[in-house]
Length: 299
Image (tube, rainbow, N blue to C red; front, side, top):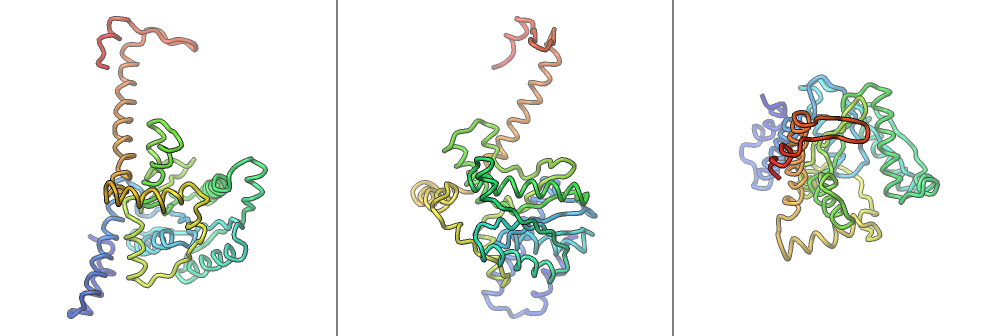
């Protein structure tokens, strides 16, 4: 049974003579919900009855994530809570973001936990960039809250676009195969898991969704600043690649980490089997394999 069925079918029943615009809005709504559920089930992100903390900045992506999880709350018997980090980087605007997220949580009757972080001080003390310091502060807060409140999952709003941008960033700055796995759809966070249910949905689909559903969200003007590498990739490099090489480049790049994950998992499992079967001596400083058996292995 579709957990969204009662929500999605209602507008269609009420408006049998819908305009073309309304018709396409409903189709888009159903498609984004379908992909959201497919991703959750594909990566076994969320189970019924779990406690899910949702990281919400106030932007379109995180507000959409909260909206979709809130619609699953009753049919899946989920316990939701909002996590918000005020980085204190944009003065009054940062406080307005916090006020917006608090109001949203209150309207949807979802508990909220807020952390105030002096990111500039952390960056200076730890010799990090502002981006690195902000990310470290966020993940520390997520881990701390998940442990303190025994949450099963912390849901983050990374999208297909974020995945594509991260792959390009890793290529440009230098990385190995594991680095190209980029943003994992699901990974351990001590006793909990980080999950990313929007990782197979594009940012443009989300922007259309919030427009069609008249969902309010906050805009962060720093997302347009060319000071940051990720923004230059998003605003300059990817549009160039789309125009000149492949209009679907974001989707292609975003698929690469999953394909690599499959290959690397196979290699790790296969090498582990060979190791157990062939290793003759295992010491702290050396491992001995029989030469002939080792040379017969396929490269």
